[in-house]
Each structure stands twice: as C-alpha cells, then as structure tokens.
Length: 210
Image (cartoon, rainbow, N blue to C red; front, side):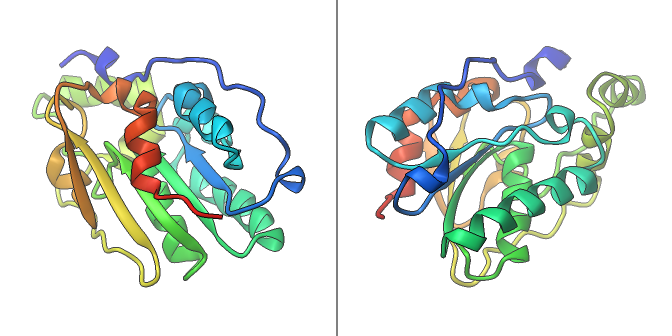
C-alpha cells in the first residue's frame, strides 16, 4: 500500500470571516492525518457562497502528533466557540471525523450535526506487513500510530447529535466498517484523499439551518 494514498490533496482555504461577524450555527471543518484546512477548499467556498459561517483549525502539526494532543487542542478551540454560540456543526475527514466524534461526546448536546467524511471513527487496522506499519509511523507520526488498532475503537452517536457518514467505495485507506455510523450515504469512485472536496455532498449532508 502506497503511503501517498493517506495524504489528502492540499488546496487553499479561502479567507473565512471571523465568527463574531457572522450569524447562525458555525460549521467546523476538521482535516485528517497529514492534512490541512485547505483540503476543504471547495467545501469552504460552498459554505461561504451560502452565507454559512465556518472555521477550519489547523491542529496537531497536521494531525501527526499524539491523538490526545490533537484532541486537547480542538477541545480548546471548540470551547472558545461555544462561549458565544449555542451549538456547532462539525465536518471531519479521516482522523478529523474520529476527533469530531470525541468532541461531540466531550460537549454533550452542543454538536448539532457531525458529518464524517471517510471518517476513522473506529480507528484503522494496522497493515499486515510489520515493515509497512513501521513506515507509517515514521512517515506520518504518532497520530498514525495512535489511530491504528487491532481491536476497533468503540463508536456511538452521542445523544442529541445527528451523525451522517459519507463513505466511498473507492476509499482504500479507511475501511467502511470504521466509517459507518448514524445515517450512511454511499459515494462511488472517489478516493479517500479527494473526499473533503465533495462540497455538494457534504453541504447536503449537513442540512444546515441557522
């Protein structure tokens, strides 16, 4: 398995208005392992075109640090947003989906909708080849090591949070069994690294209202 399959296509995030200059429930876009906010370029532009407030934090040295460190960073970001807003929506790609689910449990009832985009809700099975497993950790950091597990992580939809999972039959990184949670919407022919760019599908899954 080529490690390049794990790396999302970059993109450039458009300027997002500060949340204190917007109205309505904000959408937080969470990139995946070795990702960046720019992975959501098309989706962010789609949200802006509709007047939907959005924030896209860069966390955990692009998700390569220990998962607990990335999670702590996002807890701080989310907590700050929720001081001013009653609820938020989250869109999470890969590792970002895993962390988004944890945030929904961390802030009960405050995450209105969680859209997992090729989300590693239950982690990733380690590669059968030990050399490849070692290579993943070396190249992609502790975040990748922490996400790999022989026994899938438990994953449950939090009470009060609507969960939608977008899953592609061409995803060769995150197995469908790890991504399936809540309402499942199937997509054909889109590779894992291209999933954050599916603006129309992601925005439709949000079913956003102010």
